[in-house]
Image (cartoon, rainbow, N blue to C red):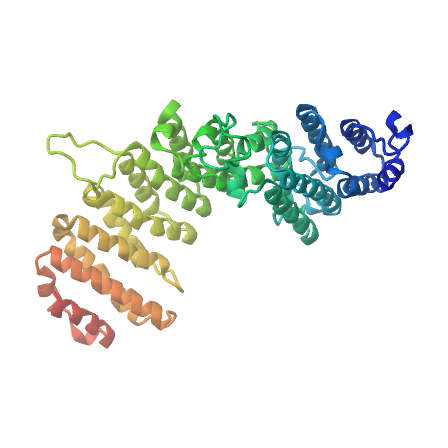
Length: 514
C-alpha cells in the first residue's frame, strides 16, 4: 500500500507495521515518532526528506485515521509535531538588545520556511476537508482550535516583508494563512482572532460549531513566553507578530485581553530604538481607541499609558513625537472632557491635562530649529487648538510667540509649516476673538510682511503661493472682525507703491468683504 510504503520510506518503526495490511499504527504514535526524527535530524537533506514525507502523509492518508483518536491526546500530538516543524524554520536569536542581526544571518530561513508551510498547509487541507465532510463536531473543532494559534503565529511571522523572508516564502506563508481561514470557516483574519461576538468556550446550550470562536487567547499563549522584558528583543519577529495581532482586534474583544496586550506595548514604547518605540506607540494608540474608558482607567492603566507617552514629548525624534501627539490627543479624552465644552459658572476653573500637554508643546515649539520637528508640531497644533476651544486663552502669550516665529521662517517647497500655523491663527481668532484685539498690531505686521515675502518668492510654485496668500488674507479678515474694523483704518496707511499687485488684491478682499 502507498501509505505503508511511505511509512517505511520514513523509517518509522511500529509493531503495527509488522501486521498484515491494512493495519496501521495509531496516528498519535506516528506523530510522536515524526516529531522525534525532526528534532534529531542532523542534516538539511534528512530534514527535507522528513518534511516532504509529512506533507505526503497528510495528502494521502485516510482522514478518519488522521483525526479520530481521543481529542486531548490528539491535540497534544499535533501541537508537538507542529512545534517540531516550525522549529526547523525558526529565526536565529539576537545575542543582545544593542543591535539587530545582519541580513546574512537570515539567509537560510526562507528556503526552510517554504517546505514547512507546504506541509502545514497539507495538514489544514486534510483537517478542513474532514470537518466539512462530517459537519461541525466537538473533536475536530477542538483540534482545529488547538493547532490554529501556533500555525497563525508562524504564518504571520513569514508573510511579512522582512529580512528573513523572500517572495516564495511570503507566498507560502500567505497560502498557509488562507488555508487556515478556509479550514475553520473564518471570514478574515479579524474574525479568526475575535470570532463571533458572544462565541464562548462554554457554548451555553448551543452545539459547538454553531458559532466561530476566535483564537486570540491561544495566539497570546504562544507569544507570551517570548514577550518577557528580557526576551522580547531576542527574536525580531515576535514584536511584529504581536503588533499585527493587536491591530486586528477591536472592541469589544480587546478589553478581556487588556492585561496581556498592554504590558508588551509599554515595553516596546520604552525602548531606546525609535522603530521599537514607534511600534509601541501605535499599539498603545490602538488600545486607547478600542478600549472603553472605564476599562482603561481600571488599575490606573490610563495613568501609566499617559506617563509613558508624555515623557516622549521630550525626544528629538520627529516620527516618535508625531505618533505620541496623536495618541495623547485621544488619551486625554479618557481623563477629562474637552476644555472647549462649557462648564457651570460655579465650577472652579482648574488646570486640565490638555493644558499641560499644550503648554509643553508650545514651550518646545518656540526655540525648535529642526525642520522635521517644526513640521510635526505645526501639523499637530491645529488639532489641539480645536480641542481647547475658548480655553486657548490661557495660552495666548506662548501661542502668539510661536505663531510669529513660525510665520517668519519659510519651509519650502510646500510651506507646510506656515500653512498649518496660519490655520492655527484662524482657529485661535474664531475661538478667542475677544482677546485678539490687543494683539492686532503685532499680528498684522507679520501677516503683511508674509504677504510681501511670498509674492516675491520665485522658489514657490504658483499653487503654493496662492494658497499662502489666501490663508493669510483670511487671517487678516478674522483679525479685522475681532477688532471691530480696526484693521480697515490700518490698511489705509499702506503705501501701494511698496506692494505688488497680488498683495494689493489680497488687501482689497479684506476691505471689500467684511
